[in-house]
Length: 560
Figure (tube, helix red, strand yellow):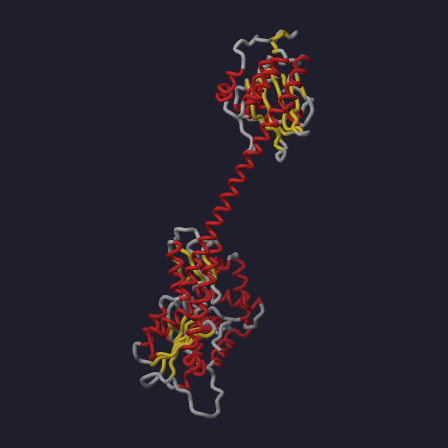
């Protein structure tokens, strides 16, 4: 039922209108030829008119209308229904003599039954409704009619402003036609009742308008409050910048204003509170955690703009401060193309070999934070530079500096590798090896450690020499399936999974979401192309070549 329509409880209807009606049922009555008492029309119209002028509540006016009509016509029931134009139904709103809640709550499709036809603008009647096949019946409504015991029904349209807005209906629990006098009196009552309905609808529209106005005023008040809060926050953030504060000070000010935690987050991380994170231009996000005040989207964007600007400025200052260091590292690890001039030197204290570490970090913000922690932890004992998703660290070999670098990286998600350079001239090759080891650690899902060559196990022997040696091994073992066609890629993947699972066909089928027969067909095809690949010593060579091929597969990231 639409929210704008409501039915008053029976008890309220009785109490509200009992004082409006005569206690003597035969007071001002005339006798019909049916023997049922019927109030004189003038008395009925006079009583309804008095209600219209004396009562302020339109609910009471319509409640009194149905009771007066029922008494005046001598029927068992009388009720007013109002139309719902959107739902194409008419809903019983005010009733008298109804005993069952199911009948009082009838919602009749307009144009059906007696009530629906009257609500469509047609005077409708049925001397015995349920067996009346001339009427369009609704099953649920018929159940309610049967439960109420209603037999005869007469409905008259109610009009307001030239439109049909409902129906005034009477009913009896015994079958039989209504008399012409009853029909005439009901039609006249519907005319004056239409005025009461029009007043009811007008006051309902006024009430709805008042509620909508209150909602709009409340919305504007909230909007003004949000705007004031945003302006206050903007003024505080500007004051932080004017006083020389940075991104950390801005987030602290925002956290104090919102009553929670405002912090940097990773670009790929899921925010603790959905919809309360904003991406930064330089990478990463700002997360709003457990704030007392729910930040508006404008507040979130405001803090994000200030912090992004401050972070970009801080990054530029940091890059300028370490420009020479970054430039030196870049030139040291690039393959040398110089044919003359003095050789480049690291300038690190001490003597001897170097450790060159490479940490792959996807998030730009996390990469910068990791670089800052490494510089703070190692100071002049290391050279470091962040380049294209990699943090390059050069330290002397043999002391605890590398361990301290790994500790400084521990709070960042990274994949790492470390190689050794005997001289400054070997730094480029060592960096290349470290990059390869970092990529291998990502492929092997070994995160959070700087892996040396020995950490790769036997695979290190396959990729530990020159790239030509590794590719020679791969081609010697996998030549028939080494192309990049989808078929060969699928066969290599199946073979590697099979050897990794110690020859379990079921495990491979489960991993690839295939039927075991499909896996067996692939293995049979591999047997034809790589005879003996899964038997005896040949299986180790094949397994090693497959693993090396995965690790040496071109990777999208590069330092230079």
